[in-house]
Amino acid sequence: MKCFKHQNIDSVGQCKHCCKGLCADCAADTGNGLACKNEHEQQVEFINSLIENSKKAYSQSPKSSVLSNLFLLLMGILFIGYSLINKNQKFLLLFGILCVAYWAILFVYNSIYLKKLKTDYTK
Ligand SMILES: [Zn+2]
Ligand SMILES: [Zn+2]
Image (cartoon, rainbow, N blue to C red; front, side, top):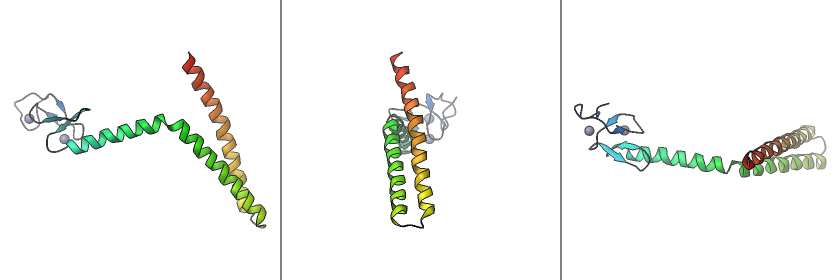
């Protein structure tokens, strides 16, 4: 591949943002992929930060899913409690039961899934 701006010079790589070929003069090294110098450096750094953030979110996902599951259970209890205090709130009661049922399914599913993960780690 040749440099996009200098058609007679071989490219050393390509911009992570626009995928154009870049020669050593046109390339800016962001530390994690090349960018068009003075053009796409910010975009490439933005892409890198997005990747980093999703990696972090992925590594923290077991914790956050446990938290959101607890939130679901709390919501269910709240709805059931509210519907018991205020009668004629059948819909809320149903919704509360659904929340708790959904939480129970997730809880069982997660405990099986986490068990699998643990056994994988010990291998
Ligand atoms: Zn570019
Ligand atoms: Zn060039």
